[in-house]
Amino acid sequence: MNKMDEEYIKKQLKNMPKVNDDRTKEEWIERVQPYKYKRERTRKKSPKMIPILSTVLLIGMMVLIIPTIIQEPSSVQEQTSSTHYDDHQVDQKANVDQQLKSAARNEEVTEHKEGEYVMFDLHGDEQVVYGGIFDQQVQYIIPLAFVSSEDHSLSELYTELDSYIDEFDLASKIPYFKDTAFSINMDEKNVTMHVPDDYSIGEGSAVQGKFEEMLSRIFYPYEIDQVLLESSNGSPVTLGKKGELDSITVHEPVNENYKLYDDETHDQRFMVPMNQEDKTFAEAIEDLKNDEQDYSIQNTIPQDVDVTVTCESEESCSIQFQDTVAELPEQDLIVAVESILMTAKSYGFDEVAFKGIPNDAIGSYNLSEPITVPLAVNPIYTNEE
Image (cartoon, rainbow, N blue to C red; front, side):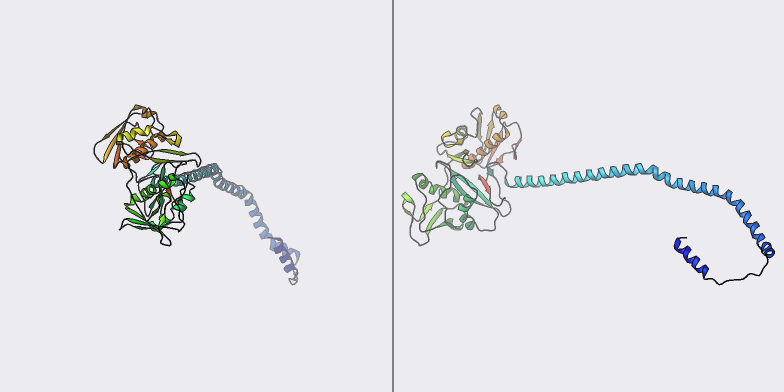
C-alpha cells in the first residue's frame, strides 16, 4: 500500500457515520475471547513456517541464480568468441573482396595487355587505328596501335588520329594528320584523305621522305591499296619536294626485325622496326643482338646468348636458346620473345616455338606450345583512364 492509498483510507474513515455501541465491557470480553484464542493458535504456527518458507525461497533463488553465474563466463567467452568470429568473417570478406577486385584487374590486364609491347586480339567492339610517330632524330617510324571501343566508324576513328597522338604526349609528333579527315572504302580498298587548302607535310627531307611510308604502315593492315588526296577546294595537293600528288600507292612493308627505342625525353619505350630487306629470317634474329647507340636503339637479345633458328615450314619456326638464357631476368626474356614474334610476323610466319628457356611460362606466355604472332605492336588503349 502506498502513501496515496493510506491518505485515501484515512479520509474515508473520517467521513464514516458515528455508531454508538450500548454493550457493556463484560459483553465485549465474552464476544472477543474466541477470536483471541484462534489468533494465538495461528501465531504459534507461524514461527515454524517462516524458516521453511525462507529455506524454500532461498533454494529456489539459488537454483535460478547459480546456473546464471556459472553460464555467465561461458556466455562472455561465447560472446568474445562470437566477436572474434565476426571479426574473422569481416576480415575474410574483406580479403575475398580484395581478391575479387584483384582478379578483376588481372582479368582486365590479361584481356587487353597480353604482352609488354604487343597485342594479340581485339575484344568486343574494339577497333584498331594504326598510327605512328618519329624517333627524336626522325630516322625511324615508330608504329602505334590505338585500340578504341568507341561507337564510331573506322573513318571517324582515323580522323581522330592526330588528337590521339596529342592526348598521349607521344615522342616526336608528326605533321601529317593535322586538320585531316579520312573516308575509308573497304570494298574499293581505298582511302580518301581530306586535307585543308594550306596542308603541309612539314619541313625537311627526312620528314617529307617518310610520308608515303607512314601511309603504307597505317593502312596496309586493312589491305588498302591506295590513298587518294583531296583538298577542300579541289585543287591538287602539294607535298613539299614531291610536288603535286593526287594519290599514293600503299606498299607492303619490307622484312624487318624489331628492337627497343628508348625515348628518354618522354620516358617512353617502344618497339621499332629495323629494315632487314636483304637478310634471311635467321640473320634478322641474329641482328637483334646489335644496338644503335646513336639513335637510342637497343638490342633485345644479349650478345652472349646463342640462338638457333629452325623453320619447319613457311608458317612456323622454332627458336632454340642456349643455356646462357637462363641467367636473364624474366622481363628481358619477355622483350626477347616479343621482338622475335614481331620479326617473325614481318617475315610472314604464323607462329613461333621457343625452346631452351628454363620455365614453360614467362609473363602471360605459355612456352610449352608454339605462340601465334601478334596482331600489332605498341598498343595504346584510348578508353582506359
